[in-house]
Image 1 (cartoon, rainbow, N blue to C red):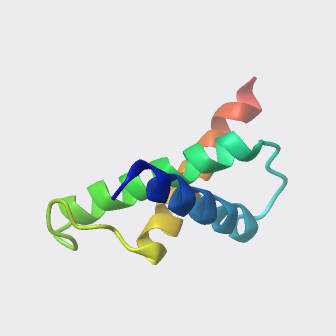
Image 2 (cartoon, rainbow, N blue to C red; image 1 turned 135 degrees about the vertical axis):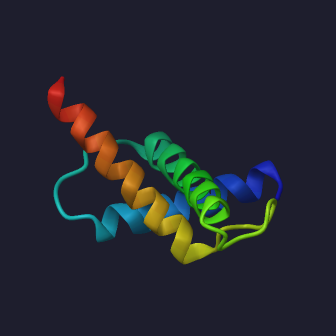
Length: 82
């Protein structure tokens, strides 16, 4: 997967995760892209650890969105403490 397509997928996944997750997430476009990319990586790693995906296989849209929601939840916990 190229860098540009990873950024586009990360942006879409980040937007979907922010739309699904309840509450007010105050972050910009860059944080949304980073959230989506990290969510896809988290989903790929967890899916590989659980045996759902082969190494190097993409996690898929649903797994990426779930990973992004997990990352958004953790980010929200950290941001509240500040």
